[in-house]
Image (cartoon, rainbow, N blue to C red; front, side, top):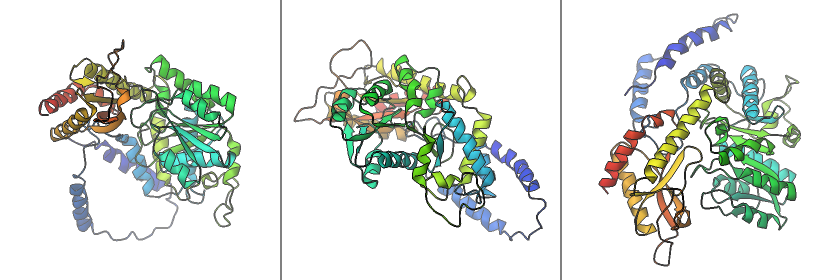
Length: 459
């Protein structure tokens, strides 16, 4: 196969335009470059990069690795010739303005016309800021999230010196709101994290029920949509999932990761606050940083200091090319990913060799080989995972509770047949997992399943 090279054709012309903007500067002697030696080193770099899974290819259907859009690569590279720093306006005037515009477009995707927000190095830092604000506004109270929420919430709570309450999930990996109601009655929960697209199973927490509990108990609500946020634009969600997304604008804060479904290079996260007044919590004194402009410096509303302006430039360019609009080209790409996941789950569920615990809400599929026990199913999952990789198909693994595979017959085909765990077996089952986050996965599904068949036969 060949890697995309169109980026290399548009970059020189953009560089010439960039040069024109600084034509009035006196000439300087460019440093002498040992191009022969640089070429040798770059060849070594290229060879070293062979030691990677083919994240850009549809046969990589494992973890959350989506290729950046070519315009994001080109814009990011172009910006590095200047290397702006989006901490203070001194370090990146144009890129700071582009960040504010791009972030406002993300906020508008959730219905927010007024907001406070900025880019971050990724979802972990963005979630840290959201929980830091929650801790400032509800001091001494706990952070609550589901057992399928990203592990970073528990870890961040520890970093912030906040107690953490883990809530059980229903058999589809979503927060158990009855358990949440019981926990809230104790009066010690300051913030609830609702996950819209868990990184393990792609499950979407029932936001309407959580909002009803907020009206009763008055906690702060943070929506961790780092993975699934962009699916708010998709037109092919189920009615139940759509109902969970529709009120997302009522959350107090939202995190979404442009470096996942937003087609950006790593690392690019985004944190948004519905109430701009929380910016007062960031107030700090920096006598040499913010004096050149009365406009807002992004460092004044961020816990991070130096941040790459190139990330903002790449995001701005991508959103100009592919606006964040329902029924637009960007949204159709998301819909293709979900179509691939739904089709894969249905075909696996119709095959007596496999157990599919529930249909995908977004574009993540989990399944396990049918077996007489959780232990045997887990062992075979591991073997199939390895055999598929040897045949060029790269999957992922996830360990789920056995109760996600009920023995009772249900109307849907998405049913497991593993017996309940007992003292001689185990309480979890190792499952196979695919994140079908490339639109091309829809067209490659036959080949993916064909390789999976041969891997199963070999095990």
